[in-house]
Image (cartoon, rainbow, N blue to C red; front, side):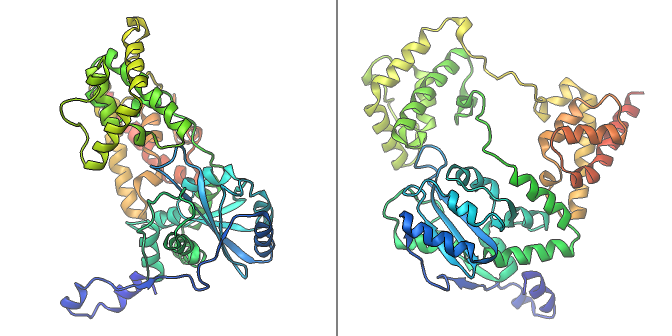
Length: 433
């Protein structure tokens, strides 16, 4: 019974009963126990045989060491299939899992927030032929919270602890409580898929979901950002090109060190300290540390001090090189882009465009409430801005549909949103006549 069903059944309850927090069954251990970690070729061969003999969809998950290691590689892969069981595979010991891919070539893969895991799974030879994303499905079904624990509570009445979600999964050997957590992540994923699919079907949204899932199958790792150093936290404090050059130089050195050591860059030197160096531009080792730490929290302060001391020569050399650049070699404070300006600047730069954006946003919000789908899932904000900032030459439905298609909007999105965009464009045209 879902939370919605329980609410309907209990409408006659007293006010006191209504105010109670819903109780959920606590999922504390997999039904079949925690399986051993698969770390050798013979054990992997047994897994492949079992998965190939299984039935129905396969639940898939991966654990990364975000914030601990450089990059987003997988450090554990979890799989569960009916009539096969649950498997925990070490992709560091077994970096080629193409045999698993072959065994699952005819199965639908069930993932939660699929685009987070698809790139790291692809690195070890795993790529879903078809998929069902329970997180995205829950979004389309109108759930306000779509984390795995929240979705399990809503559809299956089960509570799932998440206390190990942010641990260092590169740790070896992996502690038993972590493995328990990892196994539970796929324990009920296929059952959850069935419940989400039933909800989508009841709402008439199954085709919307199918189009979204098909697009996710084609998803690849996002292309590296141009000038990634510009995303350093604290860049808003940088007011001139010379300081920006120092941020770039220090960021580049830090990234090289982090990649060599396979450590998250923030663990080499936190962003706030990096920006502080760029602003102060110390010339001697004794000047690297300021009078007081710019970091909050003892652990971050300690990390900053260790990073400054351990790599002091690299920091000073980066500062010297940035200081020696000519004015022509300094980076611009903002990167040139073909993207529309920030929405807050539209009123000054193009009042007509600002008016049509405001109109479209209002209509989109109303549509979101009507169909119970988040605005950003109806159409990405960037796509809406691009089409409204530079509209097609003609503003009929066919031209707008083509423009939305060019920017990657799915058919179901275009069917819903095209009339709203056309209306906003026509309203702005009428206002200027």
